[in-house]
Image (cartoon, rainbow, N blue to C red):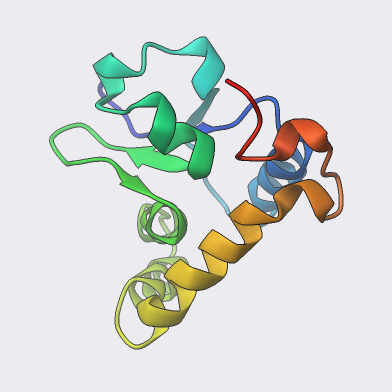
Length: 125
């Protein structure tokens, strides 16, 4: 792996819908892979991690998940305004708000637009 990879839940309709919207919004898109289709250990991830959040995996750096994964995606953009937004998202006090908001959205994603029972982070794995 030489380029960043955005790892997401390929069984979650809400996740897929969110990524499609984000992909249409940002100028550059990294390789994105469903966690169900990758070797988690090779990416430094566990099944527990990937069922609870999206992850940004960049060579030479520890993986980051949740709101920080999306901040990393924004910081990776070629445009200065996107990079600035990404830095802001990962800097206190914004990061103090972003992480719990992400956790609440992830917890209830099966009830959000595009969500299905397969989106539940508590489904039997």
